[in-house]
Length: 478
Image (cartoon, rainbow, N blue to C red):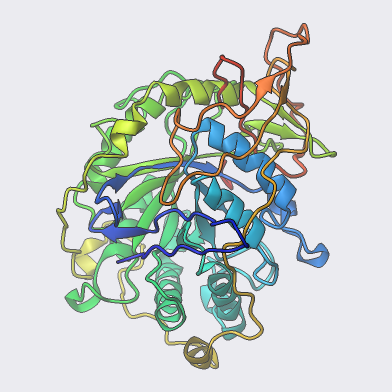
């Protein structure tokens, strides 16, 4: 599945550089220009939690350029190369934010659903929520984001299957949504864009979910209902754990014969807290990279669930938490310059043919007859959604961060800005340099300042830049 790169030149004297779009080759994401396998170094980015998606007031996590500049600069310093964004309004213009993250060398994985009524599948009774209006909304998300070169792919669902009971009802409908999205992309996009599923790490249903979505109906590898990628939200590595104790070894063994890319769509257990992120060196090691393509830390902004790397205040200033500095230090222990230049293996595994024997758990759906398109949906797939907002990369005139940012010791970080990368360059931990410095005035607070347990982040994800010191820090819709 090929994702071709396009360079958009905008502005009288400025070329807006574009990252190289990625292609899926077998079980790997691959840079089509270099042939290198791509490892996701990701961050879950949902400013304000579910409240950050507010269509009535024209607001979502990628609607404010100043906020995106702030967060992209901080994430660039951390070394993030991918963000996952859960809830987005397809009627809003996202050009500036997408362009800012593109300039920072950061890809986007976009969920097509939202928590609003009629904007996601009902896992208990999916047949009641699978209708043309719902599909029209998911297709509108495709229209909004399809032209951004830093779009890595779409998730058709997130943890829709969370137990054997929902595994009995939801799989055919999730697979139908994958089919419908891929057919819409085929008809209306200039390139193939991966569509996949983000699963709950519930071992009773995880392997069956993977097999259900990666298999090929009638053995057809080009089956449009087959997922292009499979990810899982996993919190099994807690504290000072290990490859074996965390069960990561079992996951590698489970997915060893995968025919599609596998990665963590969320990780970062917060017990104990502050987190120590010792799983980083294992995820990006020979133990896992032959099977997994990296992972996405949960999460950027602090919420009541206490997974944030930064507290976003009501005035959009940011206080970085201890987890940010810790995560940065763990990333710096890994040679990402070497990892991201490893050539793709070129090996591909044929997907299994869909059949009942693939499903092991009694009660999990083993029928691969998918629901037909609801009335009106075929016309939308053929003719496109209307109205629609088509995004494009635009020129950004100012990459400077305007808000006050403080590190975990309370020191102000000044001079912070996104550093636009050259054409085809991808952000890498330790490669972007320092674009900000901590204020020389000491706060006197040597201990990390943790956010109040009940604080709500208004809008931001933060990654600090530090003088010569390396700060460091982690999202999930649990």
